[in-house]
Length: 236
Image (cartoon, rainbow, N blue to C red):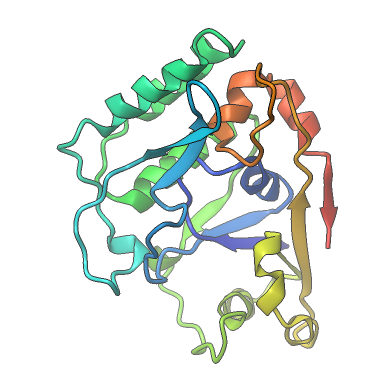
């Protein structure tokens, strides 16, 4: 079985969905400490004139050591309306603006203060739109007892060992610097890093803004075109 373990990102970039597409099972890793300025509660879309801008879900105040699973959205704020206002950047330039605005409107009908549950709902619905099967479990709900890790790369290893039938563990390339391949091979697990090759697509401006939220990709590309993009990757 090919397994991936990732934190739940907010409207993540194309490579996140490419990783889902190429694995059999997925664990939403929601027990680490929440880190500010990451991708749990924000992402980037095109700005109205040039460059990019953030979209985000506003969060309730919490202590520094709060786990991701305990992070709550300030639902009393009209944050969804603010995101829709920013999405009007695409109205006159993106061929799939109406379809994707409707998709996001339907997604936002979901009412839950948990950033984990909200992000899982977002990812699941975008996967459905892209015709990708997402078989996921939320780590804090799995009630598995793993060996205490002695280094950051052992979280995934110890989860794989506990599950018992994982023969490939897939990760995005950002973790390559601190994973020890030998630890995994010693446990008969093939460690792979999925690198999505992000080729420019036409954003109707002079400079291509790379690595934006999946929203940007959806606005400018059909489902067929996006699934062709997923074939453009490398294993490192």
